[in-house]
Image (cartoon, rainbow over all chains, first blue to last red; front, side, top):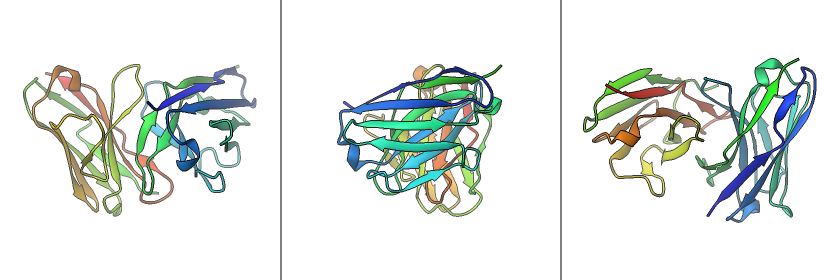
Length: 119
Length: 107
């Protein structure tokens, strides 16, 4: 069974930093691209970032480009999201998501971790 | 950026009725479109991938159709557990984008 367990969320002041982690199990982690998707309170889904299986290719939403960094450690089956220069509009539940191969849909989601940016 | 527009924003139906949800893309996404269901307090769940393929464990009452710019999610006969928010999503081009969602509520 695929399991994705996020951690690292919490309350941070505007301009601060936070690192999210996602521990993966139940599949060959290095074979799949992984993503972060977020959802602000009461709002829809917003894609944040994608990283391929090797970690050599990444993509970002314009809203986080230059502030967030996605990475992975395939030896630890763990995905990361380093978030810097946080803004109030980054407040959201952040989901760790596994992407199917090719033009893949998101076929497994974690339970999410809440990030609140507020003074 | 490819914009996905879902309609209607809210759909009010009764159990047993047929639901038809629409997703229109601002440019062609070929068949690279997926549908998700989200219930309150839960993570989204993949229903349909590549426009018309049911994900593992998804009941046959859920079906997807379309290609290019116009897509439809159909629920043939609504069960009480189907009332939720539904999102479409494309991965044809970067950035990946989602529609704004359709809320399916009990009439």
